[in-house]
Image (cartoon, rainbow, N blue to C red; front, side):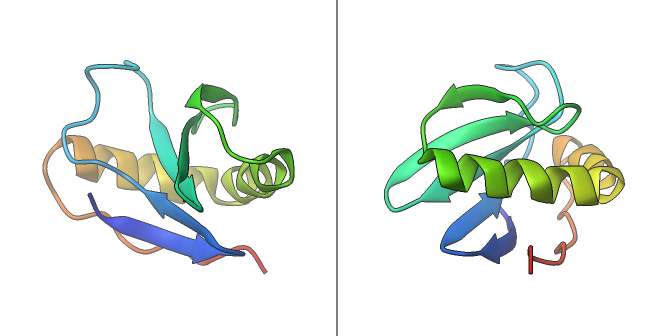
Length: 89
């Protein structure tokens, strides 16, 4: 489970071979013991829960880095290590 970014206490991860459950490109955001999965395509929450303020930060980050996230998604589902992506500043 590679960590691809961290910002404002949020850890963003992509799992290797993780295209079975949600069937679409997504990331996992972890914050203080909570976790949520977000669609890379539209930023919507697919499962889980994190605080609303953190959801908005993750969604803004996805919007800014969508192309890089999609490239990383392809690497991860093929078992390759994704690249780090700049944090939200």
